[in-house]
Image (cartoon, rainbow, N blue to C red; front, side):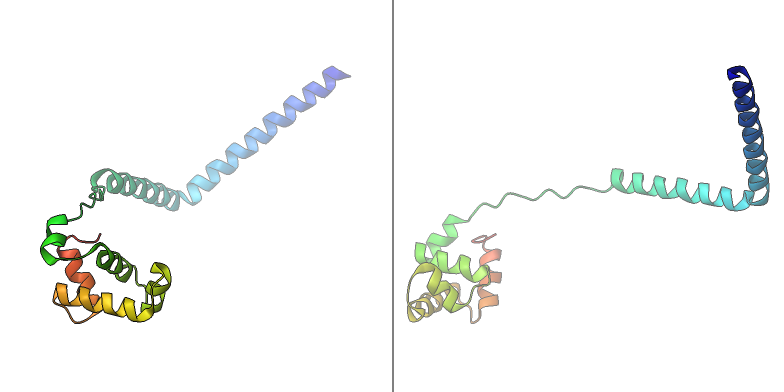
Length: 137
């Protein structure tokens, strides 16, 4: 009985293999152009990804070195430098005052002093000039 089952299993396996082979031949003949186009597209996409990854430069972030000489020449105090960092972080006057535990008027005074020392009129100008002078990253 086991021998009969094994013979039937082998016969069925050969039949299925033959049918799959015939279907494969039918599909490859019927859709041969499409199959080649897909294979070429996949190959060129892979080549493009590899070349793009291989040939493009990796951006290395330079380490920031604060320009202490410019800070000294401008006469910025440590507190004013803190204010400048907070301005660059986008903090409002109230947020600066809360974070440094000072009154809003004192924060405004420090900001005005920073503006005067940097010779600017607005926050964006102060941040831009501070970045040009390498005072902040």
